[in-house]
Length: 123
Image (tube, rainbow, N blue to C red):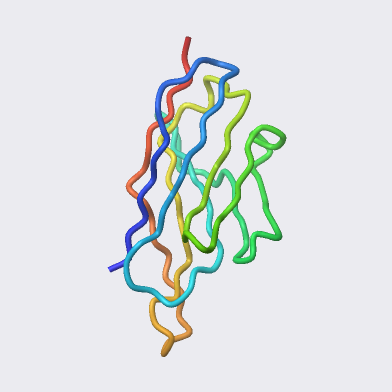
């Protein structure tokens, strides 16, 4: 059973920083792309940032470019989201997502989600 567990959320003042972590555990063969999504109050879930399997390529939503950095540690099966210069509109539940090959005998990748971690930006 594969699990993604996020941590690092909390309350921060505007202009502050937070680092989110998402650790993958359980039985699986490989992890492909990983990403962070968020869902603000009354809003739909949106893609914040993504990173390829090697970490060589990243993509960001326009709203977070220059402020957020996604990275991964494949030895630890963990993806991070460093958030700086946070704004009230960044307030949301942040979810990590991973495309995981659960078996070496199958080429199918399955998307798994974490349970979410709340980030509140407020003075």
